[in-house]
Image (cartoon, rainbow, N blue to C red; front, top):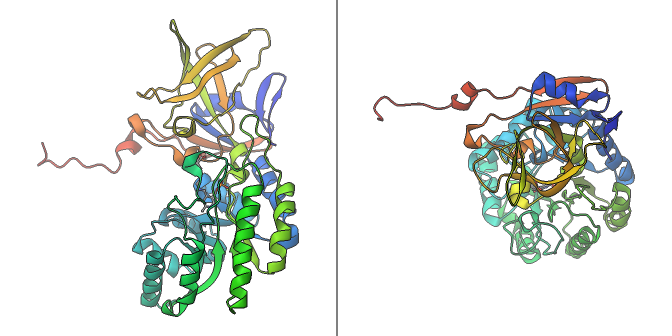
Length: 419
Ligand code: LLP
């Protein structure tokens, strides 16, 4: 469900015509709908109201300050994975006690930064990391709460690159290792092992893998209880899938129904870390058609957005719906490859896609680009990062300026001696 719709054949974001935004800010341009964003946050908050979890938006999905600020001001916390995300989270005034920090490669510097800012929990991914956090906590004189990230070894039906709860992946520790950590917790005198964390992957459209991983973890928690070890938090991660094409993902209510019964008896605080569910369909990428290029085997539509702006199709073969911002039922359809300007054959936004016939200069909207869109964009081929606009009903705001050429070289240095 989102608020990008046609009115009189013209595509709107809420009450703003996308044509107007493309004209004013040029393309490629990310456009976000505040109403869609808020709807997704509210739907989750309501579905889970019975257990009032701490909803930490996963910043890696979209760390736009304006977007995170809206979510945080409306009650969300943040799930971070780097010092950079922590810096951004603090910049918008996020309560550190609503920040949880995951990731397999936290550096000592990042750990110290987070410790001194009093974040709620580190989601710890290995024994080596646990030791380092304990050491640094001792150095800065802090007793820190941590969660152990458990890898429950469950299979999910998603792209291999975004499966994280199988033993073969680098994430978390298995149940046996977790038990060993608990048994030797006296060694970590500066830490309080206050919770467990599970995140099994992303774009999961069915409830059963969540049910399986949560059930395994709940059983584990119950076993530990018998040994007089109790936790305060269970973080059930993110991963809720959304509609890109013809998926039929579980709704927030169905998801809540499937898992609340499992976790209610624990009577502990629940944390969730959705990213895509909140941001994914809240954003689109506007792009202009540059050229039509027909060969004997393919019709190419060359657009001004590429894998540098939206990497998902190239990296995961991901499907994003691509719509004309001016619908015209009379022009007919064509089957095309929609490709970007980057000098790689892997630079495509859609393959063998049937779309309304387009001409150079036409503007199209690449849908479902609000999560893992801008946050995965790069300067590859020395192309400037796109601008971002947030729409709020009939008003809109430029929330990130387009990069310019001098931004591209701002951190570079040409030593005179080096010729
Ligand atoms: N928590 C942790 C520990 C995570 O690693 C992730 C995502 C999330 C929460 C949020 O997951 P979500 O609710 O958004 O599914 N770039 C890929 C997705 C990578 C997800 C990485 N981790 C994509 O474009 O599909």
